[in-house]
Length: 93
Ligand code: FES
Image (cartoon, rainbow, N blue to C red):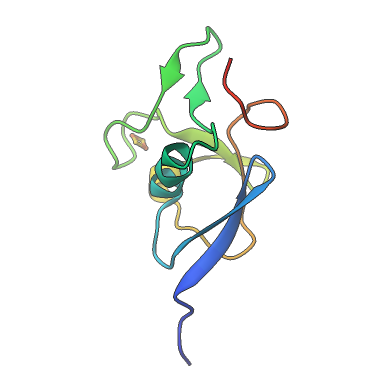
């Protein structure tokens, strides 16, 4: 059975197609580069982004299918829902 070349996830309700094997952290970076405005903010409004990429720093925590998980340790799969905690529309303040 052939693995699909891309999967589609939903970031703050908006679809995003990425290559199979892409981590959620990388997908969020791709989405941010595409100006989807998905960068995570701390409770104090400071910009947050993945730092270590190996599950240590916890800076990449987002809601994935309703559970708080590390984006750098989670691979994208078709239909995965990622919520970075931004209001509908995904724009940063
Ligand atoms: S980037 Fe450090 S835990 Fe994910």
